[in-house]
Length: 384
Image 1 (cartoon, helix red, strand yellow):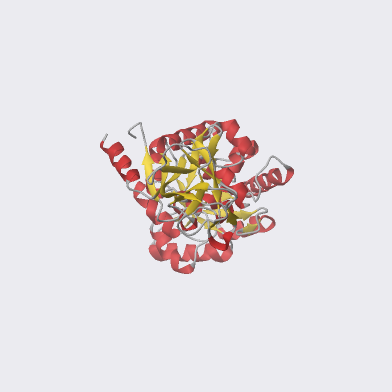
Image 2 (cartoon, helix red, strand yellow):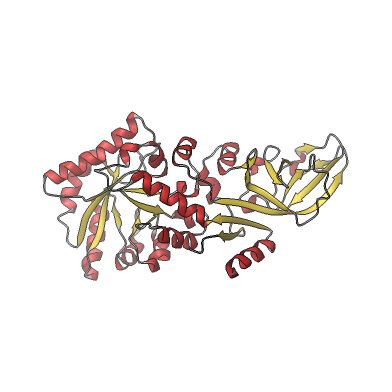
């Protein structure tokens, strides 16, 4: 009860806040686990858990049974160390990060011979053995050992001291049930099989990200051993996958009305005067703008929800404010009234995907763009 009161009080004193439903998060995680079992599920918590707040999210996922975490870089890994679970840094390391990464026992990626040699040398210097996985570029074109060179590189790397070479992984540029994705998955397994024939056994094998969990069944079964669940934990990803797994959105983004005015016909709204009112109009100014992560692309195109009704955004969104028309709301709307930017129910519902479509981007960017002055509030009804 104390926690519920604190959350309510925090919302009541926030200009803009992001509600994160930890119960739905845990349920999404369990649905993913059931869909891929017996494979393990690693929770990807890059970029502050895609903007949701990494520590509360990690704590709840651990309670739900997460086998470990994946992150992009060293600082993210250090945040999660206190939980005592395996942490894999999926990206490459810079030289000044090596000592700390090895010291803390993180699982590191081998992106080429040079990176392996540096990790080995640092492990020898510290007198420890470091778990490493070969990062294979099977088509992403961003980072890692080119698939055609992987066997030769691995043969040399396993000879280096103080390395536990026990894993192999890759990444889909466009996960789908198509020839490209199946070829990528086959390439990773083929490399592992060829190395095993030479006595080099890579027991951990993974390629499935969020979209692949939903769309690429071949990447979520043996001989793969684990999957990497990221944004689908939050209920944001390909719509077909969402319907199949029954995952739900965990977030609602809300703000408040600062002022309500009756504006005369002909008056313009916002920077560059992109909206001119054709008739006398009731207009509300909302205490959130693009500095908070409201996409500028919603200007004169998007909607908010007030009292369960969709209200159109008018004029250009500014850094700190958004203006909306109060069409059809005859009630006495007052400053302080709640405004929903993401959330709602039924036909009056706005999703992360809706914003992504209007912005011409994908849900990852939408979530990661939610600004630091947006208060994160964590909702739980089960006491875990």
